[in-house]
Image 1: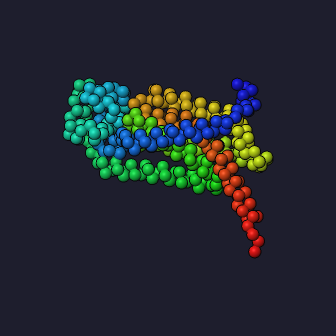
Image 2: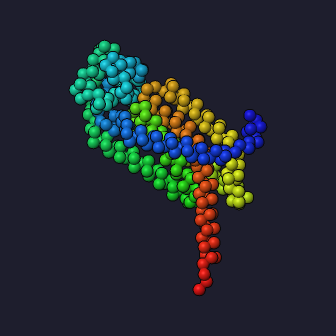
Image 3: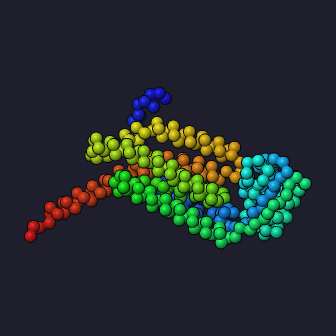
Length: 313
């Protein structure tokens, strides 16, 4: 490991770039097909529902509240602690589970069985579907805004070719993450959207670091053998990529396993994003730079050849 960290390996990553393209295109196509045919399991934030605020007379663990709701099949509700004394919680139940009056009765029944005389329901609110629809639109707009901002930023910092190479993998990562959520019917809420936006930033950071090394190597050696140069740049950053992605992955895995029910969707989106973000920075972003540069060079050479062949007037 010491030699690996100090001396970059010589792995030919771009040797299988065609297979990488095929694999990515298949994943993105399948993800889009699943998203458009099956759709998403939108959570309370997007569909509307009932919010019930409960105050206990003594500290109660969030897991005990969820277990109590399990008896009335509401264990998948969003339960959030209010304050820090573990006495007050907000229970949010999706509109799909029933009308507000029915939900209120079920929650009261479950809490009576577990905490009779040791709690009070302080208030109940109805969250309309109109608000959920507005949040859904705002989420889509926020993702689009991030992608456009990244395109402008990378175009300013690097060449236009690099900006295309940076943005396409972000679409790739976001679509695959959402496709997996749609496939397994995992709830999509605001926390998941926040995780996807975090993943876009993480993936971009990994890509930008490789791009920085590519740019430095271009300054020294030029673009004569760009594929070899890109391969070298990836290898030079490989130790950092493995250490950063590995430590982040283990941290998020711990969050997924031990963070509780309400954080599972958020942590899962991060897990998927970290894996595919690392993959796309090597096997999508980097090959795109090589192929786009090669295409532009051929186009420029072809234009020059046509001008030279053109009859002089």
